[in-house]
Structures are given as structure tokens and as C-alpha cells.
Amino acid sequence: MSTLPDPAPIITSTSQAFWDATTEGRFTLQKCDACDLVVWVPRRTCPTCWQENLRTFDASGKGTVYSFTIIRKGSGEWKEVGPYVYAYVELDEGPRVQTNIVGCPVEDVHIGMKVEVEWHETGKGAAIYRFHPAG
Amino acid sequence: MTIRGAAYVAGIYEHPRREIPDRTIFEIHTEVALGALADAGLTMADVDAVFCDSTTGMGAFSLVTHWGLQPTYFDNTETGGSSYLAHVGHAAAAIAAGKCSVALVTLAGKPRSGAGVERMSFMPGPESGFESTWGVSGAPHSYALAAQRHMHEFGTTAEQLAEIKVAASIHAQHNPNALLPYAVTIEDVVNSPMVADPLHRLDCCVVTDGGGALVIVSPEVARSLGRTNAKILGHGEAIKHTNNGRIDLTYTGAVWSGPRAFAEAGVSVKDIDYASIYDSFTITVLQTIEDLGFCEKGKGGAFVSDGALVAPHGILPFNTDGGGLCNNHPSNRGGMTKVIEAVRQLRGEAHPAVQVPDCQVALAHGTGGSLGSRHGSVTVILGQENA
Image (cartoon, chains in turn green, purple):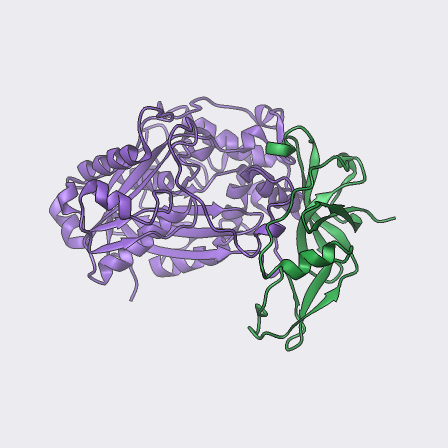
């Protein structure tokens, strides 16, 4: 299941710092100093109070499966690698992030499953995050 | 000020074909435009407002050039498959404000034959790098996330979702233009190949070429046409998005667009005689029925069971043309056909086998984009002249 493609993400000047940290194995989040909100996805201004007071911190890399699907057949470079799991993981810090669940048979994945992050180097200035069952 | 009674749907046209390799997208736009104008008893020379999505290039530039029009009003609101319902509301508002009196709304696309050039490319958003990286290549993948969560929270079953496809297929039998004009069973649906758990192939809408058009006119123009027109009673729209990473996959933007439309129309769910409910997938219908208030949240599975959606005598007759699930989903966008079938019902022009008796008030709802991330929800309520 580590046979999934590792595509380079679309990186913008806004998300550059997030993806830079991934090459060091750090999943970073932002928190608003003004209103305490944990923000996802990365941006310059808080989506609740619109201040430029966002501070970056290292997240735990732990979370819970919020929802998932087993994709039977993808397309492009994903065409022959299925079935694979596409999911929302709710991070312990709050945000629900899209990802893949790996490291277990696809039929073992379930809502409520505890998971933790692992990194897949793209070779293009970023590692992408996937999650496996928590040990 | 509201749009209630400020405008009428005077012309409708659904392209009869489902695969059109021999026409360009602009030719299909033209065909459906002329078809809807003829239906209304008007001509292109009467059109003073043009509404279209973003698939024809830069707004309406190419379309009005192609048609030789000089519109006094135009709108290129793009919310995927719900765009055309937004166009209905916006056209009514523009007519109410005196900006125009004959608005033309068109849709055309060729995803089935693939021969036409689809000039649609969107600039990536700030979220794109975090959503396009995980092997998601089709709408079923994203909608499946919503279906899975709904099942988890409310105990919705695959068989209950299948009931929606079954009802649509019963209607499609009477539509000779439908891509899939035959009835299927719950077993057919749950035994069809799994695409993205828990959605099977038959939980998904069809992929068709084609298009459709609407002509929306002022009350003065409507009166001059001497035929039954559908009065626009209300409209509501909303965008539901990922909410700073706190997305709740169990509801749609219909929780906001629905009440806005009902309030403007001055009607409630019990007044709705017929509903066109956007059916990109069975789960789209189930969640929308709950969110519009036809049943309690989480009870959609029970509601759709035992023929509730089957016309003409179900509790909520829906998608009597066979819907996107069996009939037509032109350009991968189902909103246009939703309005068209609602107007047919109000005119009494649906197939006799599925015509709702004395249909006074109809609802059409669109869901464009994805339940798994962000979508535009638009609700339109139409009625007879005296509604």
C-alpha cells in the first residue's frame, strides 16, 4: 500500500511554508493569536477575525477517520493501484483534512479509527501526508 | 422587494439527443436556445438578457458574438450544475428591477462523445494542493465520503439509497429520449459494481451530451404570449464549503437555500406538489430531501422507501423525466433539466403516466460542485398563475 503514487502537490506562495516543513516530517497548522482558532488550509488572514495574526505550530500528527471511501479504480497514475482509501481525517487539533489511509487492508478502515501521519517524499520540495492505523 | 410573481418561465427546451458527436458546443447552445424561444413563441430578436455558465470561454462573449446579440443584461454565475437555477433567480431579479424583459438561459456540453472542446479550466484555489493530491479523479469519490458518513450517523442503508434510483427508473420508462429508459430493482443497484464505497455504479447519474434552455420573461411579455407559463415564486441560493476544515458531510447547502426560497415564495413543504431534486448521485437526493425539510434530518432513508418518490401518487413525486440518474445529465450538469421538468409538470405536459394531477406548486433544486468539499445549492419554487 505504499505503492500509491506520490504526486507533487500544487504549491502556492501561501502554502510554501507548510510544504517546506513536510520535508522535515512536520505537519504544521496555524493558530490565530487574536481569536485562538486553529486554521486549515494555510492562509495569511484568519477566516473568522480576518487579522494577520496567524502563528504556525507543529501538530501532533494524530487523528481519527471522519469519513472514507474505497476508490476501486482511479485514473492517470492511480489507474492500476486500486483499491485505495481516500478519507477525511479529523486531526486531534480540530481540522478535517483530506488524505489517504494506508498501512492496513482497505476493508479494515472504518469511521472512528485512530490514525497517525506518515510521510511520502515526492522529490519535488514536498512530502505528502498519509495516515496509518495508530500503533 | 421579492421576486415573487416578477417573472415567468415562458419557454423550455431539452435537447432530445444524448450523444451528439456531430455538433459543436456552440451549435448545441444555438439549437436549444432556438428551441426554447420557439416554445415561448418568441424569437432571438426578442432576447435582451443572456445567462450562461463558464464553459463557453470568457462569460457570454462568444455566445452573444455567435448569436449577434446586444444584451442589456448578462450573468455568468458559475456554481457547476446548479448554475441554471441561480440564473432563474437572477433573471427574475433583473426583470423585477427593470433591467431586461426576455432572458435566455442556455446549457450545452459533450462529455459523452468527448468530441467537443470543453473550454473550462479553473485557476487552482488556495485549497487545491490539499485536495487534488490523494487520487481523487471523479465526482463519485467525493460524494462517497458524504454517503459513508450519512450511513454512519443515521444508519442509512445501500438499499434505501437504491430506492431513489429505482423510483427514477420507473419514471424513465415513459421517456423515449432517456439514456436508460427501463426500470431497475433494488437488487440491480446494490449488485452493480462498486465505484467508490458505498456508491455503486447505479447510484451514479448518467454521462450525456446535450443541453437545454429556458426563456424567462416579464409579466407583461408573459401575458402577451397567450399560453400557460410557470410563475417564479421564490429562489434561494447558498455555497456550502469546507468551513475552515470543520466540514460536516451529513448536510447540503439546501439547509440555507431552501428556507430562503420557501420564505420568498410564501409556501411550505406541504404545498409542494412535485419536486425536481438534483440527482448526481442517490445520496445527493437523500440529503437534499432532508435538508429541504420534506422529512427529519437522518430520516431520509425511511422517507424514500416504499415508493414515496414515485409519481403520480407518491408522497413526493420527483424527477418524472427519469432525472440525471436515468434520463439526462448534459455537460455533467443537471440543473437545467430540473427546471425544465418542473415547468412541464406545472403545464400538465409531463408524460401522462407520471403527470401529477393538478400540479400547482413545484420545486426545483440544484447541487453543483461536490458534497465532499464545496457546492452551490440553489432552490427555485415555481407555480401556476394563481399560486
